[in-house]
Amino acid sequence: MAAHPLVHGPRTAVDLLLRDVHVLDPRALIDARHDVRVRGGEVAELGDPGGLAHDPGEELIEGRGQHLLPAFFDPHVHLRVPGQEHKEDLDSGTRAAAAGGYAGVIAMPNTDPVLDSAPLLRSLRETAAREARISVGFMPAITRGLNGEQLSEMAELRHEGAVGFTDDGKPVTSAGMLRKALQYQRLCGGVIALHEEDPTLSRGGSMHEGAVSVALGIGGIPTISESTMVARDAAIAGYEDARVHFQHLSCVASVQAVAEAKAKGFRVSTEASPHHLLLTEEDVRGMDTRMKMNPPLATEQDRQALIEGLRSGTIDCVATDHAPHAREEKEVPFEQAPMGTTGLETAFAALYTGLVLPGVLELALLVERMTAAAALYELPTYTIAPGEPANLTLVDLDAEFVAGERGWESRSENCCFAGRRLRGKVLLTVAGGAVVYRERAFSVVGA
Ligand SMILES: [Zn+2]
Ligand SMILES: [Zn+2]
Image 1 (cartoon, rainbow, N blue to C red):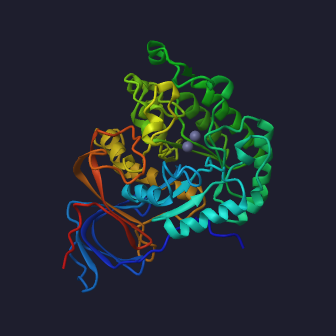
Image 2: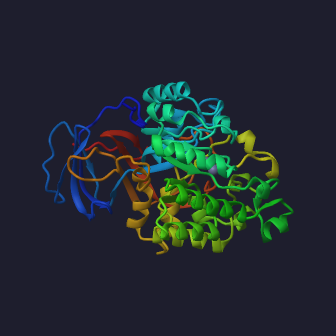
Image 3: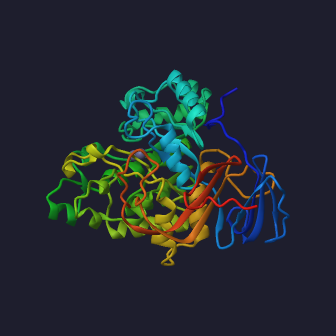
């Protein structure tokens, strides 16, 4: 029998009574104040506010004014293990995720060495079973060494617990190679996730090709680098009736290509990142290397298309593409800096502040999109209902903070939202009934 795709470290389930919290779970259709009891790793009971008696032995959390959400799930993070532990590792990466309200993440394979073999997957899962604060799934590479030329042993990797496959960081440039991977997928299952980029168009570019790149004199990456590959691969997926997931969409034309594929009934899904939903090429003017990511931040029109896509469901979920880099790697001239921003610790607050507070998105919709990825990857979805595993995030929507002012849980600090005043603070994260994160100021133990 194949190994379960998610692993986590040792956990001690605690008994909690969250009194008078506003429970918001769009999937369970709950949007009301409740008492919530957590016992033996599960949501044990939901009662009227103030209605559940406090048992001695369970921690009492006075939750009035706070929101209890299903914990978030991120289908796209870089935990840098093995080989780049100076940027992040399983402990620090999952600590950052827990601090952001996540109870599950999926790690990308562009590590050193590349995650492309069953023995390496086995050893990574063993490390995760010792160190990971929350559940981690691994996506091995589609092609060996991300070389785009030879398929990895997909069936063997699936048996060893691979969630799916991706060459993230690189596209699968050969259409024939992608088709072959999709044919193997039919036999072994697992989602194929695609980083879409045509290197013949993106080569030499460090930011979005447009007015700002011209003004700064920096080599640009045209949006067609992404959108033409999305359109091509949607067509291949449709032809093979295969299940593909498009990673980090960044522009109007990609959203349109996905909408068309979905309208045809193709089995495609997509994600968008907080930075693409909130920032544009204008934010690159200061040449801050934390604003350098792949795909690059595009125009306001592109950003609006992503927001509309998230609202309509063309974009299924939010993914941070958390990409830690050491300070000295990012503190170089813009063109030389590696691409990527961290994002796990700021995703919810940044999106709440940037999209929900101004009335652009409903809070319930944001919560749905931050939890939806699990189902896309055929994993159990977190929901707040009696008998369900307790995967919960307690947030204070009124609490304001400056991102990064008290440091980061991540080993890296290359966050594009650093220094911004945000609202919506994660106070507590519960994963499988264990408290995996507790905000420093929020340590009041009731009696
Ligand atoms: Zn990527
Ligand atoms: Zn990535």
